[in-house]
Image 1 (cartoon, rainbow, N blue to C red):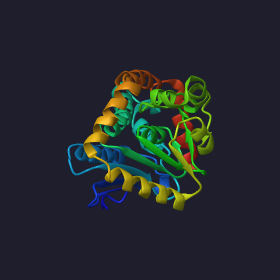
Image 2 (image 1 turned 90 degrees about the vertical axis):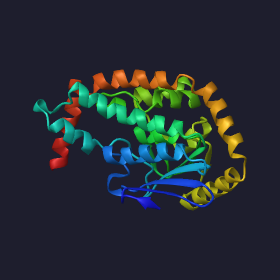
Image 3 (image 1 turned 90 degrees about the horizontal axis):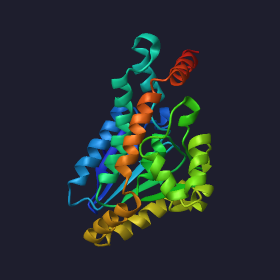
Image 4 (image 1 turned 45 degrees about the vertical axis):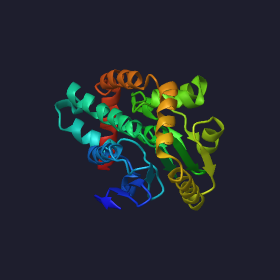
Length: 266
């Protein structure tokens, strides 16, 4: 594996490409720099014929707890009044949208290996993948509503497309945590396993199967499925971008950032 210390990347001789989020001190929350590395890596792999499957993983007991609030708070804190201006707000949300786009642009299967929380844009990163495997200790959470925001990174479509309107509404409008067992029963994830060791074993078995399958067949099958199930993905991202840009400038979100900054100083 290569890359910087926080995002490890590599492609093996089977054509298995891996991204490992290595920010355990922030529960693998993604700041702007980490997101940029992931997007650039996925875009580069999307152009390579030798990449047959992509795995996205988080180390240290978390998949990803979403956008790094410290990063956002620092940007907001640099402005008079402590809020985000329109350009900054749009930039923050564009990063999440572009991250989801980068995952969906990969023409080969993308496997999410989820152990621990997948929250916010971290949930979007996992659910934008084609196959989602999770341990029993994992959970999925769209906590945006708790700080005056709305789901982004395509989550408004990715969740509803998998679990249906009622469960998606509970996650998005109430900010309810969805444990991995319930996520599996609801059809949000592909397979559920007991622990990290079982997860690694399942991922390896899946990689063996995928790398032994016609890459052309996998690419065409993925494209056909996406055309049916995610036909309005760009529309969902546009709606999230407009709504979230406005919400990031709202008094509710500004108050949440002020409270976070105060807690961080204690």
